[in-house]
Image (cartoon, rainbow, N blue to C red; front, side):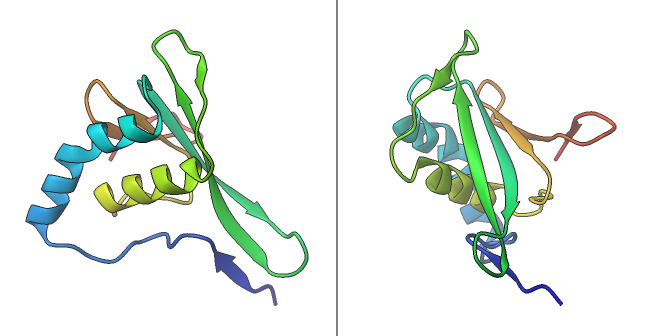
Length: 117
C-alpha cells in the first residue's frame, strides 16, 4: 500500500460565498504581486516519490502576453497555487489548470480538451 501525502490540500478550507467572491475579485491583483505582467498561469500537479511516500506538489508557470516565462520568486508556485485553490475550490486539482488574467477564469486541461470550471 502506498501512502499519499500532499504539500497543499486538494480542497482548501471552506469559506463563505461572499468571501470566495471577494477573493476571486482580488485574485488578479494578488497574482500580479507574485508574477508581474503574467496574462496566463499554468498550474500542474506533480506526483513524486523522493524517498518514501508519494507526495503531490504543484508547479506554476506564468507567461506574459508574448508567451515568455515570467520569473517567479522563491515559493511563488506554492503561493500561486494556494491563491487559485482558495478562489476555485471546486476545480479538479488533480488535473492541470490554466488561469487567464483577461477573464479571471480557470480552465481545466484534460485529454478531451479544455473545459471551464
